[in-house]
Image 1 (cartoon, one colour):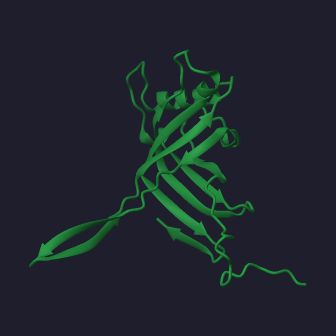
Image 2 (image 1 turned 30 degrees about the vertical axis):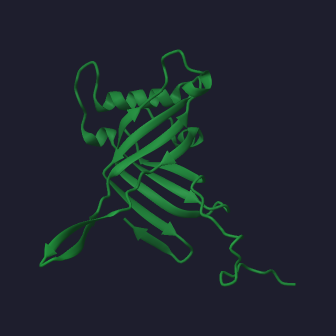
Image 3 (image 1 turned 30 degrees about the horizontal axis):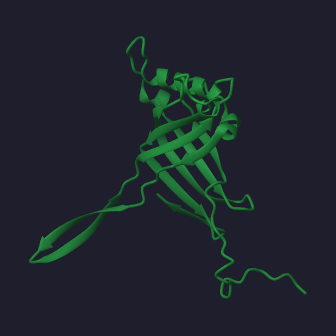
Length: 186
């Protein structure tokens, strides 16, 4: 008997295929002008990512003679993303974060650098269960806003290795690669 391919007309409800958000790769298209541990290292140590892409469409409403008229305006393309890392005894992630913060605004000299030196562009590629890329989100002009390593000395060692990082970005671009060609949205 020949192989039977998925037929989406008579597929059963219990045999659904789901897209996954836990298979991804982070690529830094540009990096801040400071210590950077490398993409492979970042990809190994990153345990979670949330791009925080806004999905709503703005609108304005005007009442004319008792009728509400709704008009779509724009989509917001800036937001905040968060990354979660696990750090080890080499403190590579903490060193990277500290160098990045110092590059943005030096604590000792009270001087700030140009935006081009501390902003970066990040591409997140999502994969399906067959490890085929299905979508990409590119975040432009990412800036570190917060990173919180636990350093008070009272925490469990397993929790001190988890570091959350928050980034703000100015624009995003989303691409879906669904086998029918690349669809750009963003």
